[in-house]
Amino acid sequence: MEKAYKLEFAGGKDESLSVSCCGLSRTEPFHSFGPAIKPYYLIHFVLSGKGKFSIGEKEYPLEQGYGFLIPPEELVFYQADQEEPWTYIWVGFSGLKASELVKSMGLSILNPVFRSEKGEELYLAIKDMMEHNTFGIANDLRRKGQLQMFLSLIAEDISVEESGENSKADNYVRRAVEFIQGNYCNPIKITDVADYVCINRSYLYTLFHNATGMSPQQFLTTFRITKATELLQLTSLPVESIALSCGYTDPLVFSKAFRQMKSMSPSAYRKEMQKGETRRNKEYLKQVEDFISQVNKLNS
Image (cartoon, rainbow, N blue to C red; front, side, top):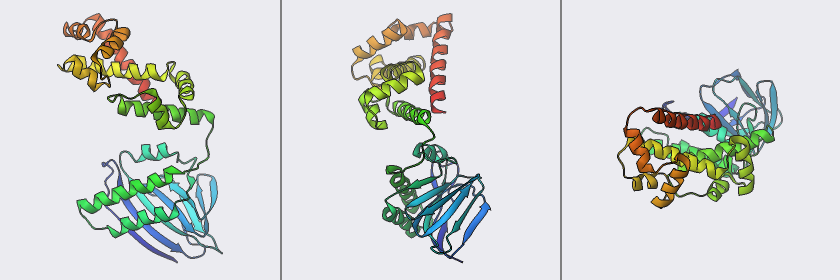
């Protein structure tokens, strides 16, 4: 038998992130689930006791302080220990950003198990979700906020098995690229990027050069100028506004960077584009497309 308090919600997969279910369970000896699948991501965290979790061909013995991820549509099995059956909390979630979020935390089918020292805080997050369980925008936002708090607590001190140095390096570069994509419009520096991914600037330089053939600063500048060319072609914004929109507080610095990369001023580039689909126009558009394709490959 299982003594459980659980709730299910009408979270939509078309949302960015939503709570599908949550609960607290105190199990009896040998209580089990599966082999079966779930349609959403599910994270369990063990508050006390022991048990085992199986996914694929691997089995993981677990105890207090450990948790495990169940990805959607993956066959899994888990069972409480005979002598010390476990008590655990869980939360299920889905949404357009769910997969990306789980991946960024370092959890996957190959690395489904983690450890956290924040059991009490994780429990309180689930408890708050259960206390705000009725329909309504206020409670819906509350549950989503607690879900993000729950995941952030895990991410703070998550410890998963690394799949190798190459994978670790690729992850640093991917996160750096994501930071640049999201903040190129701000006057960020490479030290900000390095601080975000928690490595020093020289190591970031090495990883970036190996992955892209350019330094982080070259990548940031190229990304900004690529965005600037799009704005020059598609809008009538003043050059000063485009400079600010691409992270340059000084229009002169922007113009110098633009000229170095495109061999002409921003104004001249705009005039060139206004002449129609010239050969040069097509070449610039291809450069933009190639660079965007390169960024997408880094994020895949």
